[in-house]
Image (cartoon, rainbow, N blue to C red; front, side):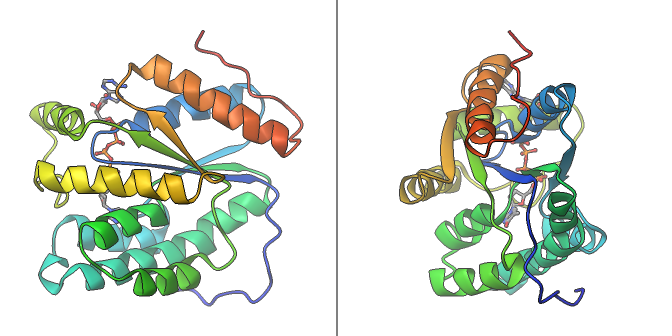
Amino acid sequence: MPPKSTKKTEARGLFITFEGGEGAGKSTQIKLLQKALEKDGFKVVVTREPGGSTGGEAVRHVLLSGAAEPFGPEMEAILFAAARSDHVETLIKPALADGSIVLCDRFYDSTRVYQGASGNVSRELLSKLEEVACEDCWPDLTLILDIDPKEGMRRAVARRNKGEPADRFEKEALALQTIRRNAYLDIAEAEPERCKIVDGNRGEKAVHRSIVKLVENLLQERKLSRAVREKSR
Ligand code: T5A
């Protein structure tokens, strides 16, 4: 893990995280939003968790292979936080300082949901890990793609049938996916300023239109120079 700088980072860009259960459509929507923002002249950095940085990607392999599973959800939460710390320090903060819009596929809400709500890791430990991993780098907007867990699993299975193997978390039961969906909805209720729920059950274009509106609102709120134009209409 790199040493933490003591200086507060002046974030000039925007930090947007995407959350949701398996197959919710996060990667698909990130690509569409990236395209729309870049067409409007914004600098965009797309990244993901676990991973996104050299250290983060090394830990991703350990986590998604299931190698850490026998050590329990607390150990996994600590590993996700270690990966996040490296990711924040080496990729997200520099990109924000450079004025970029950072689109991140999963962030600490995933740990709250997967290791917290469905793994029973305590809120106290998770809060401490968030403080250590994120320091002063918190998302400006979190888009929660809400999807019926059955539909999410159907999409994940369809993708797997095209040859991609299931990872450690995709193998888990539908009941767990339902617990996680409810946990995401609870987070959105507790933090309505930061978190916006987007109905992910609809087609890609309809979901994209909703996301563009939310991002456009945020850009206007922050008085960023250029409005995002909705390109998919
Ligand atoms: N994790 C992660 C933790 O437990 N704790 C943590 O702190 C963190 C950060 C990461 C795993 O790690 C866990 C959670 C995860 O289980 P991953 O491989 O990065 O795993 O995968 P996920 O983030 O889960 O992402 P997925 O790849 O499962 O789903 P996406 O990105 O939400 O969905 P996407 O866009 O790839 O779409 C899935 C399929 O559906 C289709 C796509 O074409 C694709 O085939 N699709 C649609 N179909 C119909 N209608 C739409 N609107 C569609 N949108 C996409």
